[in-house]
Amino acid sequence: MFTFLKKWFGGQDHKPHATIQVLIRDVSIEELKLAISKFAHEKPKGVPLSVLVGENNEMDYSLLLPFLAAMPRQTFYMSKETYEIFTDQNIAMQVDCIQQAVDDYVDSEGKLPVLEEDLLRRVNYQKLRPYLRINPTIETYLTMDENLITTKEPSYH
Image (cartoon, rainbow, N blue to C red; front, top):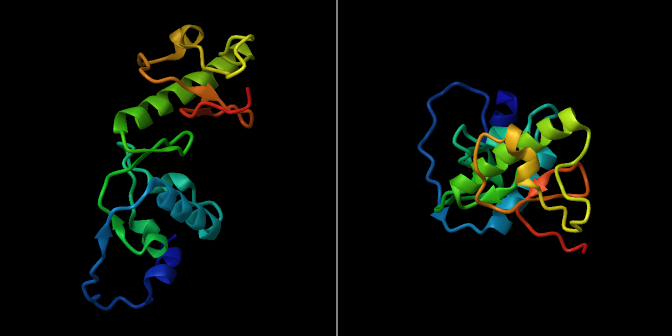
């Protein structure tokens, strides 16, 4: 992976590097998503997107600098489970806990934690209760592909 970084940041030698000034500016979530997409396309095989996320779900922008050409002024958080981006750390952490509970429920029960009549595929927290470590304060939905959760209400109803 370090060779990968050297390619972006230049130089293979071990000479002291000059100080690099990095622009700090406001970055939109859409702009950040585009940078992440470009990073995902160019990253070496075997390097997971999770390298962009710290323990507290805060994003590490250092690997995105070649695509953003700046450090975001604001702080963004990413779910380690779904890679959804948020401006609220609590929501990113809830999404991770809920996704883990959904995965455990599906592994154990062999079905999805939704009500059959719910066309929006809202995650039913009552069904997940034994698998949840938190009391979610957000509404989540299951996507049609891969059964990942999202905070965005689907438009396929």
